[in-house]
Length: 411
Image (cartoon, rainbow, N blue to C red; front, side):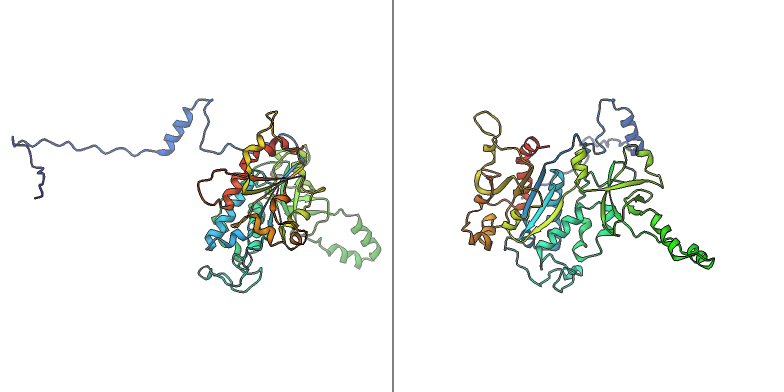
């Protein structure tokens, strides 16, 4: 039998009077927030806005490079997962100030003409003008990392519409130091050259009708200074006294006497410098470069730095625990100082398959990847999961070796 509980009035028969609840007055959240901010002590921190702004201390010469296979994109099953994976990797590169990322072919990316993105309007033809998330994962990852590293105000100039970029808006912002807003001032700035407008030849025709000669017009043209205009995200275009082809990305350096008051200056001038200048002169983290390697051996032999990588780390669950790098008889790290450091990560099957699939290494009799690197480390000893995904290993490796980068890099 199921018993029920009666909510009838008490036996006395009296009904308690009910008082209607007065309506609450509407709360003005804007005024509430203003009162909270006004009442804050000068020692309190307003957490409503980000405060971790990169502040350079001194110039640095050392670089940090990361290498990973593009085959990890092939392991993602949908276009949304592929673009999200690229975004996670780009975030790690930006957070830990990586200067170069190398996408190498480990032979595990099955290149196919099949496209599963028909619901998103992707093109089916094989080629880099079509969606390459399935047909060429290596190129897809390079394409996405290059796009995300580029300052937002330059992307429309440097990256034409492409199926790979259809979902790029869903990736998290990198917000790196060179991703400057229009109202922000920095002595260095990224820009793109635009086609310089040609001067009107009306005066030339008039001079020609009045007896002007070709020689005098040629001397006038040679006397006029060469100027290239650069779109840099500022209210006005910046002029550079150098001839640079249109649609070229350039790094600008403004003179020391310029400041935030010159942001709206319509006659602002600058000098085109190397992309490494902000890092080497002032210590700014100025984004990462992207290059490709046809194999793991090409990753090392095609290094763009003089002398190659002088400190290399290979990652594997079969390596030595990363904590042992900080253990020595003197209590200090045994890792030597470096100029160019490389951390290599494997794909689903690890770096071992990349070595086995490299024809040059096979001809040399190299079968173990640990012989290619100075250190062969396990990033997470005693891991609870059977596998650690590459995008997870990147965060673990960069965090685990952060102390080595900061303390051992030669400035």
